[in-house]
Length: 346
Image (tube, rainbow, N blue to C red):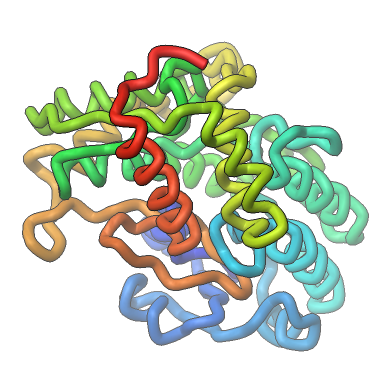
């Protein structure tokens, strides 16, 4: 049996669908079983707080493979509690429960000295998984297209306006979570991938402005596009730290993504895995916003969401992003509205 932890976020439902298509027995482990059963109909759901060792051990009994897709980015718990501590507890519980294979969803570029805290915590989680005594595979995707198209495209579709973090001109590698689900499937079924860290980039390096343009092309909408000034973001990332470290961290992440090297040679890396197609940003945008989408509510496309772990917040504001992210967006929207300019540089 496969135990999937973090199955109600961006990646989880896509992974569950892939495993169900192969008739692979699976169980979803979550803090809120009622919500998971609504979202993942027909799936065996177990309720547990995997940050608590005893609960994690009980939840993993009988599982041969554990997939951890949790993330605390945008939650009250934060990335240290979820991405590091909860993953460490989960890996230790897997060893006690007799799990044969632990698959960790990390992030491309994770390192001990990365300027983004999430990347540092993912790196530390990788080290904990390697040391837990259970055979492991680490999947390191770049930024999810579903998440970022939702962030910049969702408001454009729903409200006729959107906010781009910073200049919007820094190239970033994006990958479809659907592609990542296929890599997890491959790691489950191919024993040769045990003991390996696998980079999973997407085919394109795109700016946030280019993501907006893709949504505009797919939907036929133009709307108002504002840019949160990078200097304001830098100030907020420091000024908010004593009062709201979660929000400060999110804004600091946006600053790095607006200025750091976030590119990858996707085609070269992915050439080693020809069985898994490379999904483009346009294809994901068509699925999320195109004419063939499945409507939700008042004809709105379903919004992607971040994977959640312990102590995560509920989603709100109709965007399908964590509540903490939405609050950070509110701060930056007000800054952008007050500036009344479209930023053209630093």
